[in-house]
Length: 216
Image (cartoon, rainbow, N blue to C red; front, top):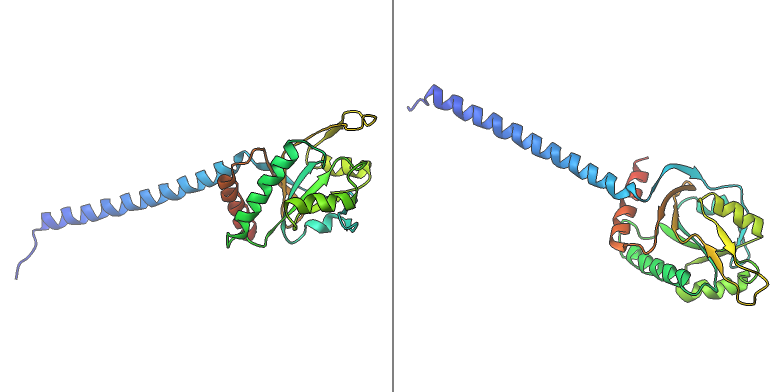
């Protein structure tokens, strides 16, 4: 029977220990890197402190009341604009259409998101008009409006604002915040996406938000 040289056995055991340690280091480093990447991809969109969206009163395009309960149980994209907007609004809403089409095909995201277009021009965008406007983009989009003081109260919660140029003009314009805001299923303002959105990156971010929320 061959008996292994003690020195050879020692070298073999040392090699196994080194390989094991290196493997642990590599795996740990990969986990750290993955977590760092996951964190960094949210840095530019995640709000520092999620805040509840409350204390407002709006109506949807069917003239049903919208309260804070509207945001419970699902994620909601919120975009402020107006139907007569010549460029920013159609471009952003078109991007949201594309984003929603991607979401519907993603098994981890499908059925978990809604989109709300809040008009900051209630003088021209009544519910009936808004209904036709949002349906042009996506039949699942929600149009929202209300008294001006309620709109202002609502948009302030996202750090958003708007300025009407001159209502006396027939075709007045409205300057407004162009970001897309995200409210989580607990009704908390959680993130803000600047246009134009990089949709593949946004989908990655949404998956991270959904996964983190599921963990509690």
